[in-house]
Length: 306
Figure 1 (cartoon, rainbow, N blue to C red):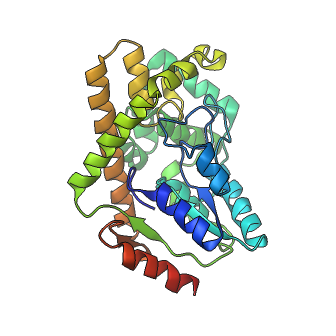
Figure 2 (cartoon, rainbow, N blue to C red):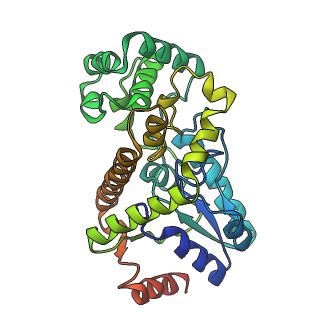
């Protein structure tokens, strides 16, 4: 686990080759086809080195829930174990980790028809109006969810309309899930110096730009399903960090310099949220600086496997 740009991918690859492992991606952007450069998806060479799972499962105009991830990733882990291999879960999406390792509170599954109706309402009334509606139904959820977060507003309204129970009440219920099929060592890697992480984020984004990130977003915008979508910026894939800012830039809402600044700032904010979530795990997660504490990190893995 760890914030974006902390070096998770390289470490997972190294350990997979050393210990006979396969990598299970725990990243909400990597499940989407076409999100490659901007999502730092492992490339063909890296996938040839080590088997990867949970990549390219949906088209960018589709949705993919944490519950779906938990079921699919669990099946991948069980298959890896059955082959006598080591599952290495690597990524930065905290909700996906929680869903897989601890389970989710039971609540109504996604309903495409209901979601379509809520999206139509948002187009007519605006997401802030739907957020205000949510505040009247579920003040706790509205306090956590920002008015500019359509995905979570939609899910909260969907759950209430389908069940008549606020999503906050559902979330307080004890998860119903079978035990995870293996012992787990949870490691968080991040530079101890936050400034170093910020430098890594900026350098990686510049590398993405040089690799053709904007051309990748242009290709997404040209897809017929996305061109026909009434609100592409509300889709989870397009709201992924970097993609939203690139989409705005190509729409003429900011110049190239402003686009880079906004994208780097959004990535830094994502890293901050990821670190906050990991800190909330308490003693269940062991922290390491991947450079300064590399020996101790390798020792922790070796002792666990032994």
